[in-house]
Image 1 (cartoon, rainbow, N blue to C red):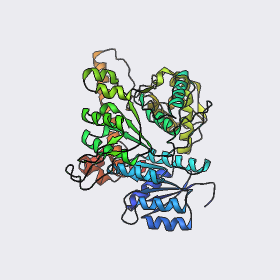
Image 2: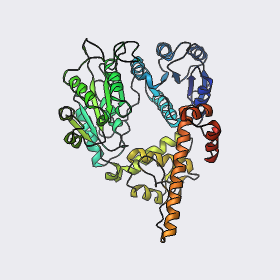
Image 3: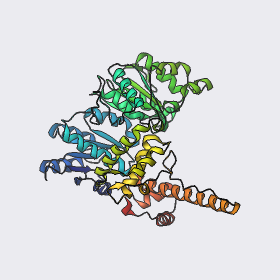
Image 4: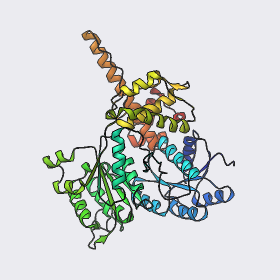
Length: 471
């Protein structure tokens, strides 16, 4: 093994997952190998040390938790990424406390796997190991920005606010449209705080129902509800001394809002079904893409909870209001994607730059990244041209057909028919790819999970030109 090319070891007791991960990582400039359990992984590492290890959490022989502990002891320079299932959200906190570089929730996309592995490789090459999931980047003002790209007055004001509030333990509320980078802001606050060497854990409140969210945050006792077969520590306890980021706080129920209000006042928690109060030291950062004040007026959000979290609000402006940041962000993504996709595109031609600047970007930075990624894949020249860009998409990333205004009723009917067909085709394609990704591109399992007969599922794949080579 040469020093110049990083090496990655995939550890999972299912061979097809190992092979699939290796195929995904083949786009990166790295060497890959796999092991089917923790013992095999340690044997491989004894022969040849690896720069990055990506391991499943649950395995039949020497699971990911114990493998992580041993690697931290024997190979402290190796970055470890732990793949965790949805039900293992608390375990994700624990692996971060032990010293994992990052955790990767299942199911994940090929882009997510490549991104976190690339981040681990870059982190290892430029600095000694620590427990932060990303290596901070210094800006001209001296603050740590965590990929906050741009020099507009609006984004510089955000950076200044981060610099002021980070060293305190004050509660922060981040407000901004979907895709503006609220989690990046939260990570920047954590990275500049006195808790920077402790756990940072992000929770998407929009994906968890009220009872499940309460159990995940506060923990539960055995027998507290159906399925509670043993005591379980919640995120707040596991993240003691660290930071917890609660995203999309507008989606939580009034009952959980009440529980969070009490926790904010006292930093004491009572597990679901418990009788003994536990005290922890956790900093909370909240985020929302909705107007909470309007929600309080309608009764959908508790007024007392709103005033309790509205301590230090940071407003992130949408991308359309800071046009001067669009090209720097686009160039940043281009550089990342050049590495990810093994390309060497130099930049954007004037026509492409003008189109990027002219768009309103309803999906903000997330949408911009999607457009740049497709352009990098599409581009066959040294610079990205206007023909490589697909800007006619909605805020959710669904590509919309070009809109040509018809001049007769018959042309209008035909145009409406074409628009419906194009939208349905795009939705079907994304449906198939999503199902295949969730099931590691196993067609039989994907068909069974979606409730479609395997032959019909394969027929849809053929219709949209999707093959296993598309992974």
